[in-house]
Length: 265
Image (cartoon, rainbow, N blue to C red; front, side):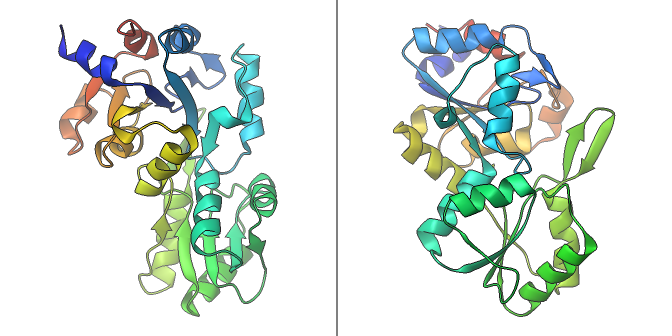
């Protein structure tokens, strides 16, 4: 039996990154739907997860539906969901200033978060593609005055057609410099809070969960660093040179989801 076979045999629940893993842009990757079918046929489960907190889960549900992948809300999670759960569990009722898009603001309100524009006790930085200088000024002022500093995730850039756009990590670098070095509490991949929430949400044990994605420093690291498994697919950002340069080593390296699916039994 190959090492890859033994590894995949031990994986009972797959947490799937989307862009670069399940699809590229608006094109579904070959074998992705067959992979999901094999997961269910072999008595396993899956969940889609994205660090991108600029869009609502419903946007991703619609996008997947156009690729003939029809899922319900319980099969997708974002770093925004993890942040909402963390705030409710640890800082219920606290006054939160959120730097985010309208869909994220709506999700926070529906999640029971007490959003404010003044006298914030906590500042949360999301992937705000509607970011303004006024929002940055406000966030920095609150943090300087003692508000807790949080971020939904810490990706530096977000890949788009033709290149990259600044993501939450870039926003937080600016805020940190402006506030005398204050660093955020980060909640998305690759942090423990994401794994804890997925364990609670799915009922699977950490050792049975595999995080699958095309980025070592987020997708793979989430599993490897937190007692789960990290499977790298070479269908997106990372290549073998990335693997050689990375301190984080994947538990397994596969061409794509189709390749992983070939070991499901």
